[in-house]
Length: 479
Image (cartoon, rainbow, N blue to C red; front, side):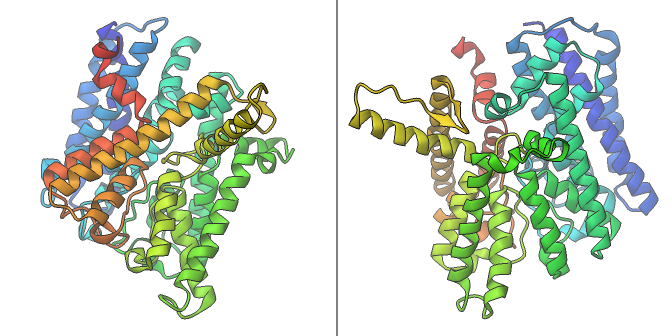
């Protein structure tokens, strides 16, 4: 493993973060707020750290897979670390632990927060907070590959270590073409949603920051009461549409726009994704009708937003779902665990793996009934290789284990069981809010410092889909 190559690419990661820190500092200067110095100093530090390896370390023609793994994981860790600087320089309530929590939550697009009064932060710092989610939504390495010259082999290695394994299987393009598709769809959705929100009456700053969080399925809002602050069915409707779109495989969105073949609607993954959320909305809406909300359509409105928000791992809120009946909370927990499609910005187990699970169970039943039969697992008439099925089922098992272990540790630290379990599930799925003391209109400030560190590890495990961070930490043992 060549340390100089790893350092060179990590330098580019620092430079990329420095660029967005300078943009946030510029916004702070225009606004005349007190975040100018923290953001400017942080930008200079990031730029200085990044510029030297970029200049003095020569590029390599190719990199090995283990080098790519280290670059990707270290890139996420270093981004999260540099992201703490503006918070720490700003001061209370940002201790290092709180700043680390907020930064990791941003870059992993989790959206959990330690802030009790978000609106007390200056606009520049709020922009940086939202920008961390936008960077993390598509992945900092993907952004970097789009602007840093690299050979096809290098780009391919980094891309495969950055993107979900299921998404890599589903994309049918060369690496460079795939990167272009990701960026075009990502930027297009962000710009389009921003324009729609401005037309709906939202201010430009709020429109941009909410679009950053929506398309990244992150959930950081610059408002204390999240989207409920606007009390607008039109704004809620726009955000719901873009949350749903951001949870669909970006290649299918691209095909749906460019070739008009209807392939997006023929995808069993997309059909299940939409159908599951529709059923969830109806069940939750009916359950809270007359119990929480008097009117039927009012109940459906709030049920739809919460189900879609958690079902896409976005985490925005228009109501305090912690006080809803247990039946509704259990359905919302299911969507917190499942989330949306591979190849999107969503976290969670992902609906692709849920479909693999059910189809593999059906295949097993068929094999038990017909022991001599050769049963192939297919999705959309494509035979899924056994290694993909095995990896998917192993991932689900490990995913549940991580949530259980995290919940166990949090309860040991004195956190109540609902907050511990839902908070762990939300961290692992990069969803944001849980229930009880970490619900939609609450925050994670009361979680003990050790618990916050546990949850940040879980956030990173969820964002890097377990295997990446695990191989990074135990690289020599795995070898």
